[in-house]
Length: 243
Image (cartoon, rainbow, N blue to C red; front, side, top):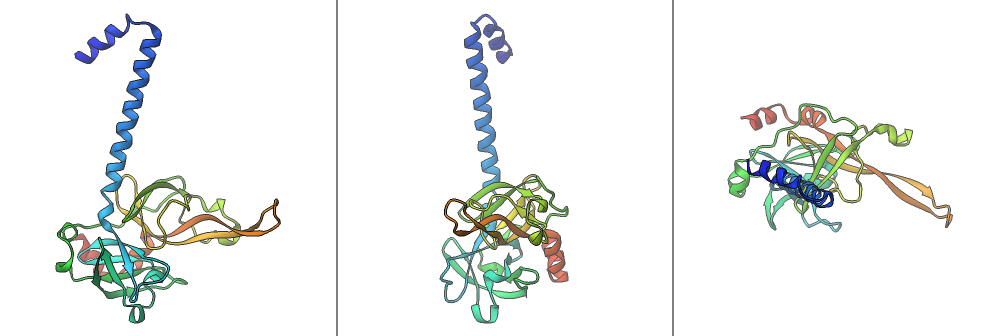
């Protein structure tokens, strides 16, 4: 009723005043929507972790995602050969020793599953579970990528946008510069389930017409999709996570 009364009084005001009021309402609504979206995206941050080799890799920390029940998933090439690299999960600066559950390869399925004794993990993680998305990603779909430092929204790119020789990478995202690198998570924007794990950049060599020099241009990022991850996981892993 109060809002209706305000609207009625506005009808008696000059046109420019009404315009400014409506503009203010729209801006406020946009701000609130943006803030709520940011809060929703940030709710995924606890699932994002760092992956450290032993000794720590020179190129900086890798990324991973917590699935639940002490299980973490990362890109296989981030963890490396586990018997040699002895990867650790790092959460808020604290390292946790891992056990290799299943190890993939960069040339095959670029996924490795690591396990940490659940009782050692922070309480804020012990009760969490992250489901793999049941549906396949589709071109144009809005997604959010997550690393411990933050989240970024982007969208699924059609493989038709890539040169023919790299179209075998069918699950790709468009924003290369701002999104997380290998091992970071790609999440469905609506269901908040895990769509995939980031694997690699897709780049091509191009000659700059102004200098004549050849440079590497990043076109997209490929992520291992959830349906491939589900096939890769040991048979009892998915069942345990659903409990």
